[in-house]
Every structure is written in structure tokens, then in C-alpha cells.
Amino acid sequence: MPRSTRTNQDRLGSAVFLSSRETYRADRCEPLRAAVRRGEVRLRALARRGYPGRRLPARMLPEVSTVGFWDALRTPTWGLDWHRHEGLELTYLARGKTEFLLDQESFVLESGNLTITRPWQRHRVGNPRVGPSRLCWLILEVGVRRPDQAWHWPDWLILSPADLRRLTALLSHNQQPVWRANDEIGACFEKLAALVQAADPLAAQSRLQLHINELFVALLELLETRQVKRDAHFLSTRRTVERFLNALPERLEAPWTLPDLARQCGLGATAFADYCRHFTNLPPMKYLALCRIEAAKGLLRGQPALSITEVALRCGFQSSQYFATRFHQLAGRSPSAYRKQPGASP
Image (cartoon, rainbow, N blue to C red; front, side, top):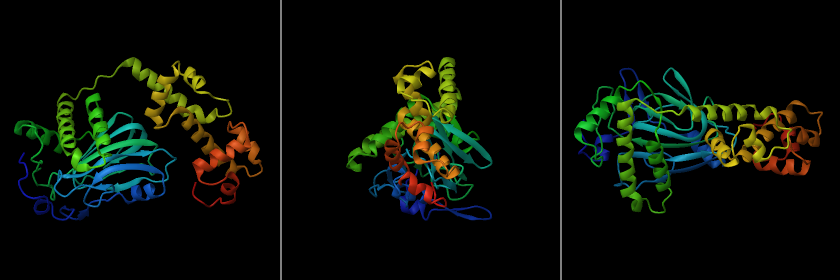
């Protein structure tokens, strides 16, 4: 497909999409901005065109709308409702789990999943809230403002014309929005995530360009082969850990240690911790603490006759003082203050 030779401003114009019946404007992720301000999520991104993050220099990779990642570590209170972006959007869930909806389909993203969203395709992340997760992304402008327009790739992509034609055909007609990424794609996103944190974006430009090129080469190979090798033992272990973590909120009174948790899944502590981070985006003991605090919230509101100490013990805390400290750290207020404000958001 043709590469762009016009300037970013000449070709892109305003961020709108003209369908036969409606005009759509590109989303600017306001719920994510608000979550960052509240301290619920850590955001690291380079961006332009109103997307959140540090500003990309004007002449630096002008077709990149945003590249970066978020770490949602606390219990989420936000999600990205139905929205559209002007560019091709690729996301990679490095850790955790969250829901992803596109058009009429709903998916539960797990660590290692790749999403492909065409320009102006309607989608959302979270239903309604995102899950604790580390999500990496790239939104690349391809110059689409009407349904019948050809895609225009940046001049700095090094793929051959034949490869770009195949990639465009595969992406523009793709009906499978969620894929299991391979290690190469995951590594590309992690390299990009590291670079967006550089003190000087211009100093990172060459490597950003290199790794975006690597990403699209790897994406083309993935789409062409449509094969993902999956190890049976690995999948069995993943299911074991996932089932255990899902059941853990019913077993909070036990005095769990990290070795105890790992033994329940037949794993060593290090391996169990790796799986836990994949599923929850949290180390095991932090995930356990979060489960205990969530259970405590339910008891504080649902059983007002219980004392603070009784709530603490039922949720696995050994003392009310430690419970109060951890509750304030994770919930932003004391247990008694939380109980006194039943109408407030968690």
C-alpha cells in the first residue's frame, strides 16, 4: 500500500471519521487521565493529538499517536467505555486480566494476549472496570478518514512494498481481534515500554523506530502463519494457578505465606510468583492483601454488628492495628471511616 509523502498536518487534518451516516471523533481516554490523577494507575507514554502522556516532539515519528503502557495495581474504579481511535491500535496485555469488547464480541484478555483494532473500530476496555493489569499499546496513524480510503504507512517503516501490501490486506480485513502473541511480539512491546520512560524522547527515537519496525515484522509473521504453539503442561499449570487464585478469596482466614501458596499449586515460590503476576499484575502477598481488604469492605458494610477486630480476624489479619494500617494504604481511609460512609465509592 502507498506510503505517505505528505506532512502530518496536511494528510491528517482533524481527528474525525466520516461514515455514511455519522461523524466520529477520536477518543482521548479521559477515564484513564482521571485514574492517573487519583493515583489508581501508573501511566508512562509518549503521545500527541490529545492522548495522555509526555508530548512527542513535533517531527519525531509523526504518525505515532501514542505508545506506552499502564500499570493498574489497585482495585480499579474506572474503565474505557465505548470509543474509537483514528489509528491502527495494537495492545499487549503483559500481566493481569481484563475484559475487552469490540463491536458485538466480548473477550477476557489474559497475559500474553494481543489485540488488533482497526482505525475507527468501536471498542472498549473493561466491562465496566478494567482489571489489575499491565497493558502496553501503540496507536499508529494510517491516514483513514473515510471507509473507502487506502491505508498510508509511514515512510520510516522498513518493510518491503510486498510485505506492506500483505500486512495491509491482513489487518484491514482482520476479523479476529484477539490473538495469543508470541515471545517476539511481547519482547517488542516491553522494549517500547522501556523506551517511553527515557528522559529525552529524541535520544530514544532510533530505537523506538527500530522496535516498532520489529513489531510489525513479527505481527506480519504471526498473521500469516495463524499458528501459536502452546505447551500442554504450561497450560495445565496456568489453569491450576488460575483456579487457585480465583478461589483464594474464600480461604482468607488461613495464615498464608508465599511457600504455602506455592505448594497449593505444586510450584516453587518463584514460579508461583511469576504466574501470579501474569494473572493479577501483583506479587502473591500483595494480591492476598488486596483480596483480604476487598473481603473486609464487604463485611464492614454488610455486617455492621461485627467489630473492627472481628472483621480483621475473619479476613486473615493477625491484629486490628495491622489491619487498619493495610486498609488505609489500599482503601485510602480507615476501616471505621469506610463503614461510616456507606454511600461513598469503594
